[in-house]
Image 1: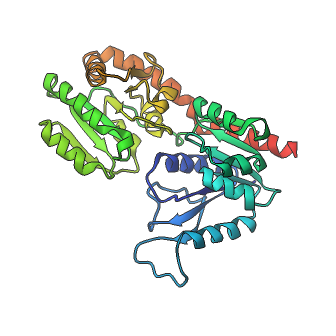
Image 2: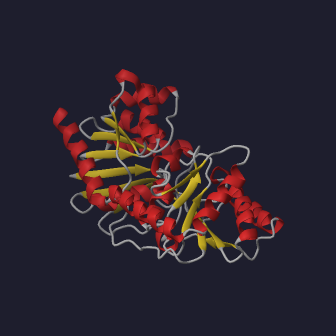
Image 3: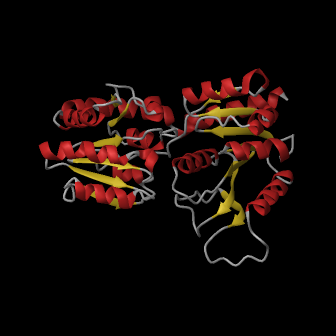
Length: 359
């Protein structure tokens, strides 16, 4: 079976890109897989790509690359239409609502067309108009599944839920004895790392031998560095930069903190749990609540007026209780088993076979 995964760009370090690379790798064990990237922004993808996976792109947007034809959004869109109309594949999986609309409009009808969605549905007219032409929608979390089902209504395709796979093992395991708290992801406002730094200021005052490591890069880095200086945390907080092996870095920590205001993908959380590291997150954040079971594989802290103190208190409680950390770590490893690549691929192939049979 030939499967094409259509992405805006496979070259970035986003969580959804990580999820697609993991899925493509797992599918490539038994199927012919290609990733079609609308834009090529770098020489090589940020995450390593299995050599069995074919990478193609539509628009070369690398800095300094000479273009013989005019660029721009309109030309890229027209090139995408042409590529979709001539696509030779058994299955097409899109990864953004805008791409799902284009697949519904232009991809050959004999191809099984599935929209893979991570976030909240766009309530735009194109989605409601064209998604009924798709064969299925697949979400990661239950909340997104319910929201997409409500949006598409009775006329839309069935919305299924399949989690993102972790890479094939063996996975690194934390010994839970390093006095390190880790956090990873893009340094952007939605991740709310300012909340983490303020909570860690409370922690560092009481447990000065613990350190916080931030992995990632983004528009907020300068502001966050200034906040570290303001809070007097320059000897306690380390900006570690980007890494394609976030799991390996998480395995060096004893806790992982997630302070996002609207975490919709959760690959950071899943990778931490896969390393057997308890995760502390905010209860109101949509993503962490999908993956963290309070008191089983991590802790959820209520958002509100005292959220900084409450988050610091949750961190301190686990820092001082090694046995509880190990109990939560065991729960984390059990949860990670549900993201085992073989089991996830079995769900995808089962869905695809059912959709092909329905035709």
